[in-house]
Length: 130
Image (spheres, rainbow, N blue to C red):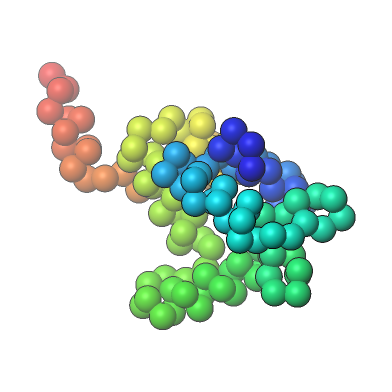
């Protein structure tokens, strides 16, 4: 965790990527990594480990998100959360080109599909059109 960035070493399809952390999340995540996790493996710090020092894989994240979503009564798995992430950041004004990188998409068209614009924002944008 350096400069509000987490480096994913082995992401989807074995790709690495840098994931930016919001200013609001950074202090809690830094505290967790420095004080609560308290482990490192093979001299490479891993921010998220499961009990028994097992790696937190994509499949394990998917499984845990489905359990949490089921308890909350909302759509489960990684995909709805990724769509929510893209939509939220898009509605906050993050440029689509930046969002494409944050989402790890090769094609910006995929990122466009993930974003659902806020209806009120569209109405406000149209007020300035002559």
